[in-house]
Image 1 (tube, helix red, strand yellow):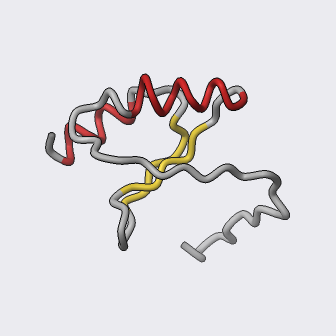
Image 2 (cartoon, rainbow, N blue to C red):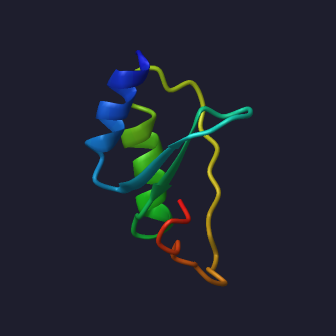
Image 3 (cartoon, one colour):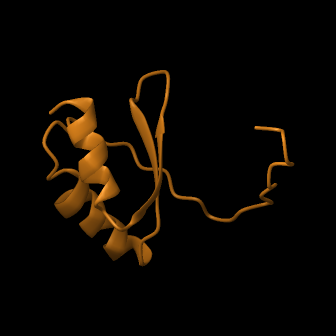
Length: 76
């Protein structure tokens, strides 16, 4: 699958709220919202891995958020 097809497919997964193209060992970082570990398992196994071109995944779970800082105008 080419990059554009992947991006269209990922954009159609309602659990995905952010998609970032990254440098390093991985190609993309997805931020997803799911309901618990069963929801995560379903998303990774049945939704994400079903997409053409997905060779492997790496999952990190956020336990809590210390803070989130909105960007100031003009700081982007």
